[in-house]
Image 1 (spheres, helix red, strand yellow):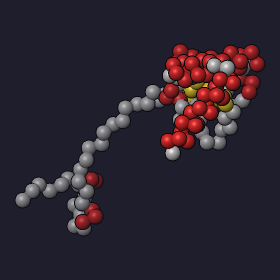
Image 2 (image 1 turned 90 degrees about the vertical axis):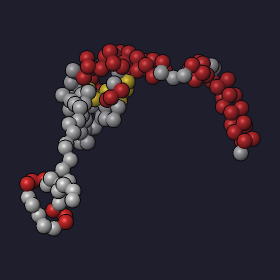
Image 3 (image 1 turned 45 degrees about the horizontal axis):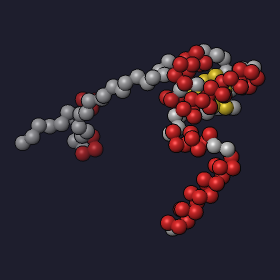
Length: 135
């Protein structure tokens, strides 16, 4: 017959539920931010924004900025309070975050967003009409 499965814990049990096949445990690779504490659920985070890979580590050294929950892997930070930056610094940070996000959009979307508001509305109305005709 076949070979008996190895048992965990070295116990030789007689009942079926005691018999468990041996499976080696694979080690998980360490996460990117292994030494950084994630934001806990009891923290009040005011704002999350994209910092980009160049500024991410630098910003996390500031008191009051933490890795953004679920978004830290794409270099977003979250502010715990408003006094982390002055008003001018906030403007600069949020403008940079806007540029990072805008740069990731497809060219066609960026071109549409660059149009005046009246033309954007006209394009939206046309797109809705096309969708209504398909339905």
